[in-house]
Length: 167
Ligand code: FES
Image: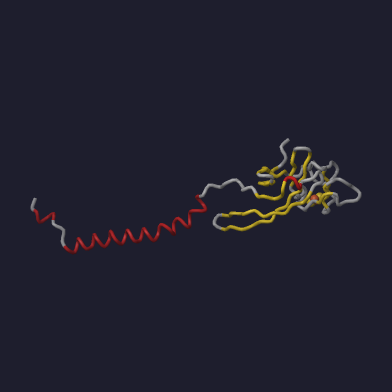
């Protein structure tokens, strides 16, 4: 073979060099865009973060309402969502109940119906729950109130997600 065949012409050299540099620059610009588009989708879904809501020594045996906010991440849209809970102490046990009625989702209140003292009352269709969140038979709700997952750290009560009560 002649040496001439292996020679790269000036034009070819320039083409290779410009293609290589151009490709490198294009990749450098595209990668952040691709990452931005895919990152929230590829990010592992973490369990809901716990939110600090109240000092443990302020809890009483009487249910108290606490209002708090959680960070919601929906793909790449982040927002804050308002939540509430009914919290109380029963001896050493802490109970944190969701106020969302299991009938059609209205908000229940503690001890607000004079005819049914010491109960959670839902004004929408007169639903009733005992203090531990158990639905009172004969009223519309067919399931107990959800319980928040909780943690106590440095004297504070933290709440996570609300889950149906385990049987
Ligand atoms: S929504 Fe609560 S009783 Fe119907």
